[in-house]
Image 1 (spheres, helix red, strand yellow):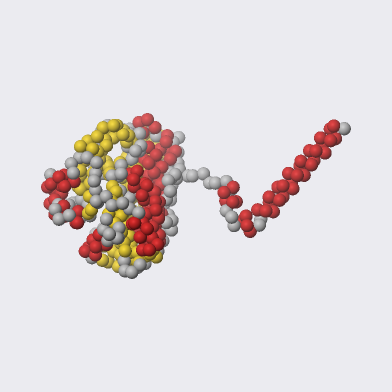
Image 2 (cartoon, helix red, strand yellow; image 1 turned 30 degrees about the horizontal axis):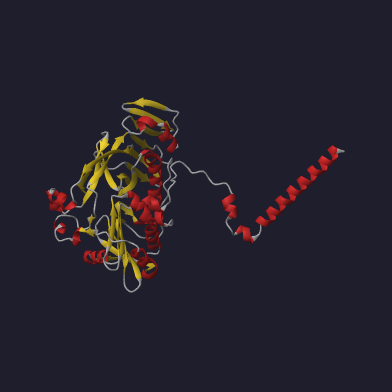
Length: 421
């Protein structure tokens, strides 16, 4: 009798469960649930592929410098402070992404007009390297299809006529200045962004009669701490070995052999050489292992993902930035460098940390210089920028930009110093 009762109760439980599942299924078919996005949240998510970034698209291109100028001329400038830049950039970068996405036809402007825009109500971005505008839009907005050509290091959102907001930039190759209208408005976008900035006395060299005779006009001058942080430097592959790199590059590590100064790995006919000094080089036989897409923005993004998944995962306190993207004999050459606290690191004899070559939609070769940086509690004394400029006559002769830079020649530590950019 007891077994029969348990069997009946079990049957009831099964029936209730079946009815519940049926109700859930029917509910999931209703327009309310279909359009709510709940199903996407519940569905299994694709695992990130090797080199996929954990940071947001917008933070992939953190500028080295920001300057926000209000309508009254008061300016807040930030540089050499990565934490502060990471705090300020997201909302400002979103505005820049919207401006790039809605950009109209570009027109050349004079340098005098560019300087007037800098002095007026504006948001200035300095990305340290020359960034293709299509790649910048892709990182900030996602589409990368605005049609703007060329690359720029310096980009500006500024007040135009009446209520319009202009997108302006200095083209990297020729140095010419351009402007185009955007869908942004001053009242809804530029005014709130500039009103929230607290002026800190930052200015550009062209606004100072003395410094304008010594430095590049767009050297941003801010109150910089006189004691610059030093860092311990090391080769991370000495500890991590090649396994982490092979995994990040989805490279077969089974077939390998020693070579002078390192180890060579063969994946089919592709060659990857890992040197004991921390340099990794790749040469493709057929060029199909690392697809880069058919657009400039896509190629830059794929190269950046590989750089972040390898160098970026092992560089410690540093972060990567795009140094340049240029065409050479039908191929695209992309270079990335290290930044420490917003200061560029000049690495070895070339300066850059990674170089990628893209041909026919594939990354066909690259060179990666692995370095890792950690604070070592030491500091070095830095002169004020005006005194540093006066002590470096070669800078004044060419009116070059003066920046704080780290030079890494492969030693155990790096220290900040003023250098001509």
